[in-house]
Image (cartoon, rainbow, N blue to C red; front, side, top):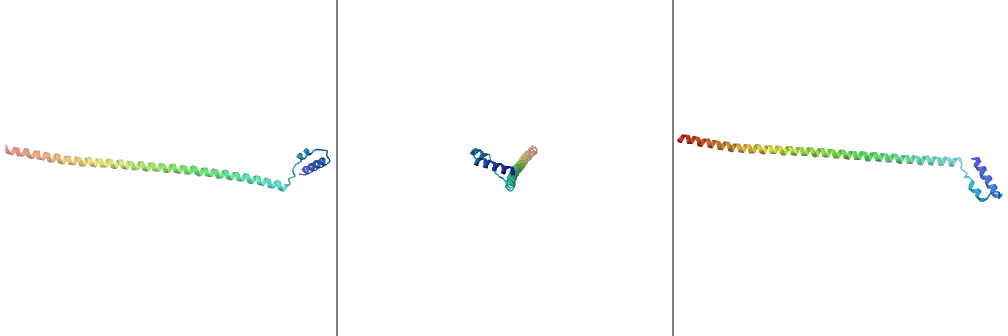
Length: 131
């Protein structure tokens, strides 16, 4: 710190004495006191912490998006499972209905068959009595 002050004073005196040209003024180093230096350090640390906070927020947002996507996928899978169960129930119901229809058809056919056979038997018995 003191060296900077002395260096700047020497440059000023040499330029005033016209030993050095005006270009030498560019060699002067600004005087930075300890308070200003500490303030710059704190500002730098503050900026670093802000950057870290932004990164953490971004990471949290990414994690939330990932969780949201996972939840959507689970929801889609559950919807597909429910749909498959509904289809199975519908096919079981339709197959049950088909079985019931077949049973009804068989029952009707069998009743008709029995009636025809009983009528045939009845006619056969009548024929036997007539002869």
